[in-house]
Image (cartoon, rainbow, N blue to C red):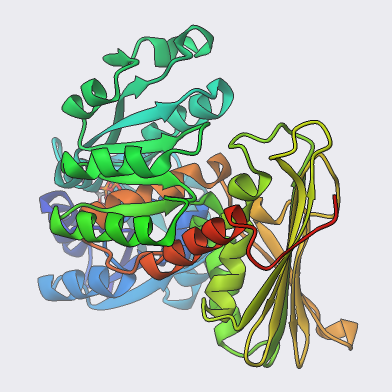
Length: 440
Ligand code: CTP
């Protein structure tokens, strides 16, 4: 009996995949199909995959071409599989010519002609096809943001609304739509990304939603809780997606950390301590507006938004009295506590520490660009380190998720409207100096 093996992601199973499987099957008597796991795909840069592993396996099963389906989870697994299943032939599409010659030491390697004119990427791009406009005046960051769209199937950044075009890079200057008029930008796009350097997110978000455009907005969406409620109601009414843009939320390491906590790895959670500081200039009038949502994100996602009491401890700038140089927030929950510290113009260790009854999680500075964390115990031999890929500072993952939400393939918003609301409530209380001790 001749055993053949092939591998792939097989997202949105298409004619090219089926032809590949049919020909691979004909090469022998028994066909094994290796389907890549979601995690493995992410580590090799395939971040756009639409279907879950279960959906992709079910689609292959339905073809009745595979005699056995296995999951490919790590680099180097192919050699193990070939030995384990006594494989005679490794078959793969011609887009991989030469790449798997190293397997010739273990079995025959055959490259099959790739079917022309179709691919999963193409289908995903066609399904989504969102034209996006960016709004903001910060050249470095917007250049980075704009350059990430090539990694995202189905989102194309086609325009910018800015009053700072002179300082933008050439790619941005040459986008099809360059304007200082927000209404003009909205005419040309399906979605906007807001990175405003004033604090008027609310009116920009509202205008976009009124024009039936999806919105990805650097947090906070608004500075009043009731404005936030109004915006989400408007988004719902107009069938638009509205999401807080906090890149950390979309990184693999961060989402694994949340799952790990749910599994009880460090026991009951007693405290979350978060610090975000930098010496950069405050962008949006208050340091708390710039950093607050990012720092509050793990607190609200781990402990929820129903804190019992809160206390702001604030040092305002000596030169610009309205800007907080340093803000600390203490939150008390029913059976836990949290502290966040944010500063622009003061420095501390930008770590995230989660205290549990069995152990703790430590994420080193800068935790908000997380690609690694440690679970630590009293007995250090039990400590574990977790590493994940973080490309493009997380911008591409954020954009992929945004595009998947638009395509309605994902209804589990990473940052729920409830959390967005809690951010806005915090901002409102901060402005009103509610529960605030001023240590200026
Ligand atoms: N394949 C093929 N013809 C196509 C597309 C894919 O023969 N038009 C083959 C690939 O060469 C590979 C297998 O199908 O052997 C699984 O490929 P996969 O990467 O999952 O599919 P793509 O459509 O290439 O996916 P993507 O666009 O995400 O790269």
